[in-house]
Length: 262
Image 1: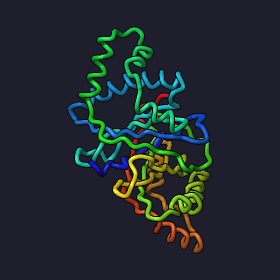
Image 2: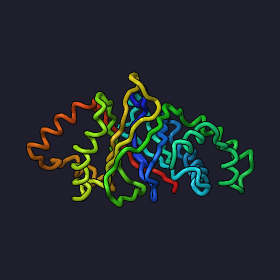
Image 3: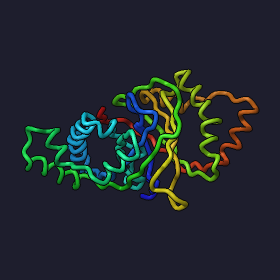
Image 4: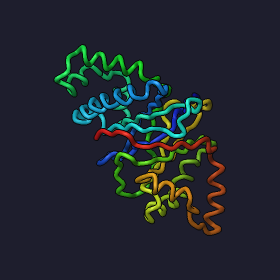
């Protein structure tokens, strides 16, 4: 389970990682969920219920958005099966939400026609339907210039990285980002970004960063995976070779957007 991160991870991107009208600085809370096969239908009912709560939080301007992603591969031995991503405009807002979210108050505002007993029953069902395996706090570091908008069915690949050199982020932005930008410009992917883990952190953390690439659908993702990735001149090849030395590429996950609140 550590594989799905003590750094947690994996994951996304709201990853989402992208919200409409996001601020210049974006903070993201990744929460990895383990769901047993027999609880699958209950879990989806639970997240549908929670999506209403998150829409109320968006309306109250305490969060920018929320996403539910189904992870793949999703075997019970491979870690979590689902990932939720909550988007914030500041670290303070994210920390406050983690420490003092009044769930029942939001539930009452989101579902004024439901009784307190009905709301309590759904919150109890939440606990029974899944195990929140990991929480990871991220800060967005860099991203491509694009106008990509997520929708249900959007695909994302999440590359979990372990920084081994302080120049890692510089390498991503100066060496690898231009390559991803070209892929975006030519329609081979929708967007790319780099996230830095705030917590957990330290030498024992599974990873330190996630790079994510989003695709409008499975067809675009498959076409990218089957493509060559484009040509690089000798100078770029040498730069890439040096850039690869700045991090350890730990793992890749794929995810599909199932629900979102904006």
